[in-house]
Image 1 (cartoon, helix red, strand yellow):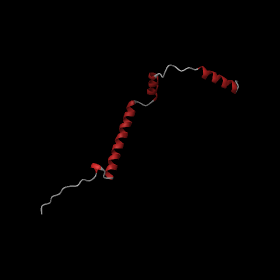
Image 2 (cartoon, rainbow, N blue to C red):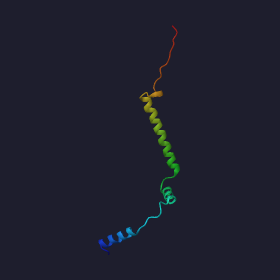
Image 3 (tube, rainbow, N blue to C red):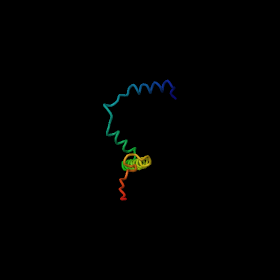
Image 4 (cartoon, helix red, strand yellow):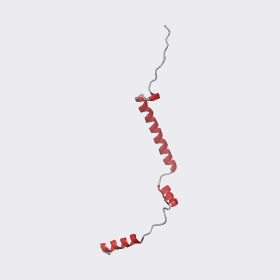
Length: 81
């Protein structure tokens, strides 16, 4: 069983000898992200549902607070005498 100092020395030597590649491997990163994440259709459906909820909530809040065109409009009434 190696001692803590030996393990520390081996890790330090490994880290010091490591050299990064030229740059990030974007195709590999994107493929791993696509494999790990949910299906794009699930993301699109969730985003669509969230948008519908936000729009309905905005309409209800705007109606309740009588904001803009959602508020009651004055009506011109001409009643003959």
